[in-house]
Image: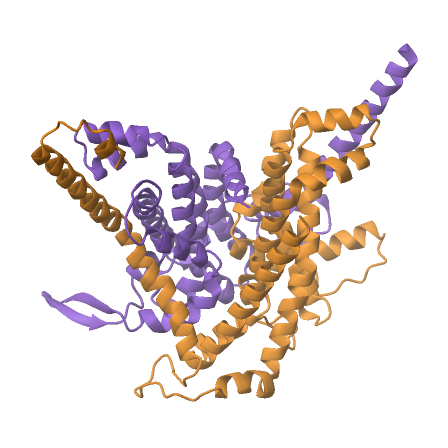
Amino acid sequence: MSTDLRGEKQLRRRRRIWTYTAMTALAAFFLFPLVFMFVSSLKPDGQILSDVSSLRAFLPVGDISLDNYAGVFDRVPVARFLFNSVLVTVLVVGLGLVVNSMAGFALSRLRWRGRGLVLALVIATLIVPFETIAVPMVYWVSQLPTLVWEDGLLKYDFGWLNSYHVQIVPFIANAFSIFLFTQYFSTIPKSLDEAARIDGAGWFTIYRRIIVPLAGPAFATVAILTFLPAWNQYLWPLMVVQQEELRPVMVGMQYFFQLNTAWGEVMAYTSLITLPVLVVFLSFQRAFVSSVAASGVKG
Amino acid sequence: MTLTHTAPTERPAAGRQQSRRRRAAAGRREQRAGLTMAAPALILLLLFLVVPVLLAFGLSFTNARLISPNPPRFVGLDNFVRAFTADPTFLRSTLNTFVFAAVIVPVQAGLGLALAVLVNQKIRGVTAFRVIFFVPVVTSIVVVSILWKFMYQDDGLINSFINTVTFGAWQGTAWLNNPSTALGAIIVLSIWQAVGFHMLIWLSGLQTIPEELYEAARMDGASPWQQFTNVTWPGLRSTMVFVLVTITIAALGLFVQVDVMTQGGPVNSTTTLVYHAVRKGYREQETGYGATISLIFFVIVLVIALIQRRLTRDED
């Protein structure tokens, strides 16, 4: 009996050692490019290339400085790119939370004619990948009317290209966000609404005062799931924004990358725009993980 | 409605009528509130999703150009004929897209599941590993593409690593400049970047399987592998559908890696459907033809998603 137990204990320990070895090797596989990127951003070009053949590629040793970062700021308006991306991301996520949660509220808690049809439509649009509509949409937004402020006069013009709103407005409404809100809201007991209505509350008040405060996790999930694509936007701004002042970070980086083969500076740029996201991720990693999990639960 | 039935009969008719009117007014208010609150999202979805989908249909039968003084002219099926008979790059793009998806879907789903099983164990420090495996997912694919382009160079990190582990036997190759390795190189980095996402999806599926089932299996003397095939796998069916569909749709939409790393080359070995649609419809301003390619891409996505759903449902 005791030898049997000891044998099992040994087996379990061996399995645990194996697990840790595998996980460590995988961790190295997932981290090495990023470590290499951060470390290289601190080195002069010649040293990056000569360090590649040894483990020094992953160590901040030798001629370490922030010169590459200074170089990036000298060469391109990267602060402006960062501002543009933050602005677009904050507005897409923020307005998206309001617009999509109101729609989710209407679809999950109110009875109105057309609701079933709308819900079916929202679910049907989940399957449309953005890539299929990107090209026709460029054509479409280039024809949309817009108001421009010119010589102190408000003028009417056509074309949304080269603007902030063309980067924001098309991405506020999101079928998947509406779907998540609808699902979450329908788990909140309906009796709360009825009680509030007996007290004379209107529907918007019920949404504002009762549902929103109770739906914190749904808001966090949607915020996280819409934050990453908004920050990482590439294909769309590549096509609709030509002016340098309006470029978001990803497109700005691609242009910088094309005109510059100084790898140290390129690595400094990529590090610069990766770090903020990593910091956000690591500080909210629990929420990130549960958001991604929530996005898969519906199957 | 039940209220009217249970209302005491001796109640004056006027009061009953009044309450009915009040309820009708409440219904109207609810109707109005529902429409108003859904309206902003609905209008935006209509403008920036439904209209572009319809436009993709409409424009594919025209010769529309992005910037042109002439209005689009109806050209029938010309664009479709051109795609399938006169545009070898389109055919190559379709083939590459399928090859990419055919490799990515099983490999990424399988690796994701293996990772999920690995980090589903109750051992110390496992959360840290989950976070580490997920880090590439929050890294922008543009950043990842630039970084790997550097590593894939002739004198880059990948070659020097292979050279080290083979004790100098490896000559090195510029992975992205070689038509026979470029697509494979893109496949590797794509999996590296995205597999952590599907690990988490699998993991949430794994955690819905009750622990008692494993205990029962262990009592019956099931080996870890038997536990996996008899308990874990059957419990993951709906997760599997979701994972397969999302990976397939993402894989078919391959664009950024190609745009940043290879621009479709060398000799069209990495051009994809979306890349070709953007090249034609945007860079060369042939909106009509670009819409045609987008539409074909959409139909492919739709058909594959439906087939996957049907196949996996029938197994139940």
